[in-house]
Image 1 (spheres, rainbow, N blue to C red):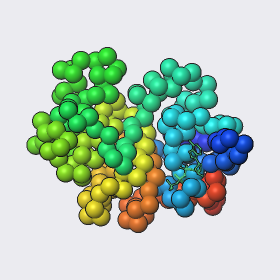
Image 2 (image 1 turned 30 degrees about the vertical axis):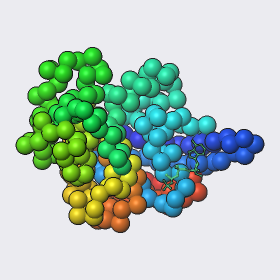
Image 3 (image 1 turned 45 degrees about the horizontal axis):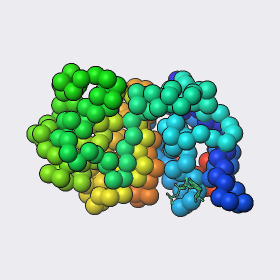
Image 4 (image 1 turned 120 degrees about the vertical axis):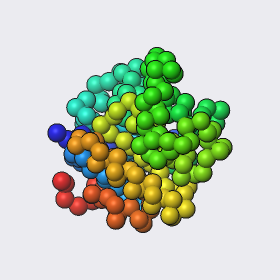
Length: 227
Ligand SMILES: Nc1ncnc2c1ncn2[C@@H]1O[C@H](COP(=O)(O)OP(=O)(O)OP(=O)(O)O)[C@@H](O)[C@H]1O
């Protein structure tokens, strides 16, 4: 089953009297079990597309289904529940809570879902092992390298077992060797489960080598033939 089905997405932003069309009829179908990179020139609409797929933003028009859910039909509370439970987010600057340890950061999504930290701990530690940080569970972000912080963020994105992980420039703040390791990890996470999709916006030139598919966004549209 397709994890992402987007059709005719338009997103307009009003800036005073001017209207910016960040997306101008973008259509895209993506199956799970893949690591997909979204590339294209600056301002092409890549982040806007990612935000709409993650229910962080809503299209002006067009339809978007993610993991079987029609995002346009969700109210604000349902959209925030969708983001918390059904999507994992990975950002350029990691977005870890500095005062929490690695395992507490990973456990955080479950805490927000009213589960106790104690209950979440075994899974958080298992996920840290999965990303190669089994020996760092009690470290705080300031005691970790950039690559390790991004691994913690990847473990956190997996906490609720989402079908889709969305990564916005996940290697943008890492040197190229560490970035390549993070790309390998994201690819393996995509292939761990048959239906999991990892969708990454990137300018990283190493991305092509590890991606199963490259999607190019240009002028608010998906370039090339639809899949
Ligand atoms: N909140 C907003 N308000 C107004 N305009 C916006 C907003 N978000 C994005 N835009 C505009 O929409 C267009 C697409 O932006 P977007 O961030 O999606 O591009 P991008 O391809 O991710 O670019 P980059 O590679 O530089 O990050 C740009 O012209 C941008 O200025």
